[in-house]
Length: 193
Image (cartoon, rainbow, N blue to C red; front, side, top):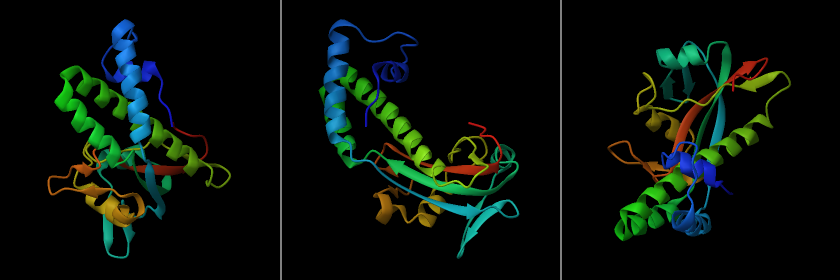
């Protein structure tokens, strides 16, 4: 797993710029430390989408209005979760105690790493699609009108604690912190991504 300096800089809100000089050296040092702490894990499962929901053995995920529009024409969807692991959380805690700059850099590195990892998970899922199928862009709880509470159902349907080491607090925060849950629609024809 890797992540490039430009992507880290984007999450540091540097626009198109990249760190230089001592800042670049610090980013590089923290990136190396982050990469050694990462233990990625993921889980996914495909479900039929029927009557505006995903239903499986008593757990039912309601598809919100904006998500339904996003998935128009999709007869099935993957529920997916992924994380870069608890080791990264420990690095974040150490960085936040050390300096504000280090905390910002490590946060940016983590955001870039989880995004990169989830893109690779999507590539794995694409490999199992049937001919003529494609994925629409992933859609996570908390976006649009898709409630954050939907994470409970997604993680439950994926048995995420066992499968990927991902759990949810009472206040709906994912643990480890750099984790993602999402719905990815499956459409016949060209990809919408």
